[in-house]
Image (tube, rainbow, N blue to C red; front, side):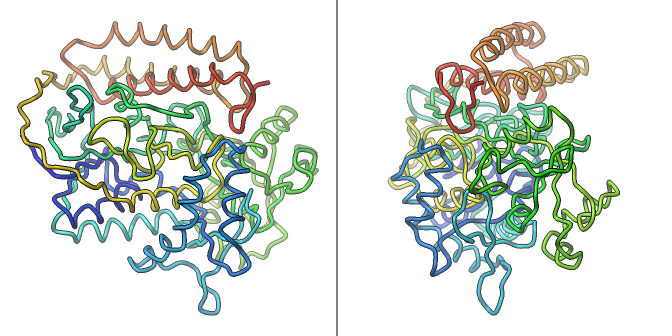
Length: 492
């Protein structure tokens, strides 16, 4: 049997940062679904928020976060995160992240819901830069082992203690035991028909936790990013909120601005839930576009190099064209319930990053708090994690990998159906009737899955469908319980 001190499932900012800390205490193994760099972190364009300016204050950042979350967040957790924001960003700088500077000081930008410029950034590829630096540091560490293309299947559990996980690698199923298991598997974007998330985000970690009996919280709050590029591709290309932070305006099919009708004070810089619903509403009459053509080409090419280059592929010029936008599933504000040190209700099981619900985001995430949350909370190291005395306490399941192409094809069709159900029944605007209908359709999907899945065989596609069904059903059940509109959960 494989053995390690810390088993981390996932390789985004939360998992990698925790690995660097944990490696000082013992051996660390990182299981990652594809390549180590394939994560939501790598797609984060905007930046990382923190109290970095003397005109700003922790109290203002706390209040902005609490207000954006529809005052549903956990004040203690928000305060904990904000007060450690400067320390977290300083740590990234020490690791080698080169944030934009002006006159020797960090250059800060602003995004929707923030009352101040407080977001440190690297062009329009901040997440990618952070991910690259963390991967470099992790690969250099002798105590850290990375296992790529390893798809975690289930947690190994007896009573209320987690002992490790099963996973697939090279068409085989294997097991790994650990003193502590850390779920840092990211989000659930691929549960939806339209998303900005990469193909790996099928809610695997949350599904594994649910099956093991871990408590989840606030799963009904799925955040839809207001401005994905309205061009057919998978995933949809994200048009960072910092475009609006730098002055981009939203326009309806007649070319008129409309955000003043939905948020008179903040307009385009309102919180994401408000902007997404406004675009969703205006789109019924025709295409909605983003306009930043009043800025110079030189400024746009320097400030948004990746966005500028990507739009050129579609023969769109950021400096002169109206850019078509559409909301898309982007981030889950809920997840596996944890305390401030990442502990779940199961012994030896921890969760960090988007898979976790720390209480920071409440009912709607404030822009650029996600990288901060992942970093601050994964800085907390598990105390008093004792070595496992034995690995013989478990009877391990016997499964093999199926090579049946027809099975894979059927599983892919089921995944596609789940995405459609979630978009239509747990989307930007919901109704009690739609939510109930969605739950009924999920029951039918469960029956379909039971018919195609052999008892002792699985494939990655089948397991992803099982995970998507598990998490999708949990989202709909949580949505059913919340009778009134709150943040991302909007009942028409």
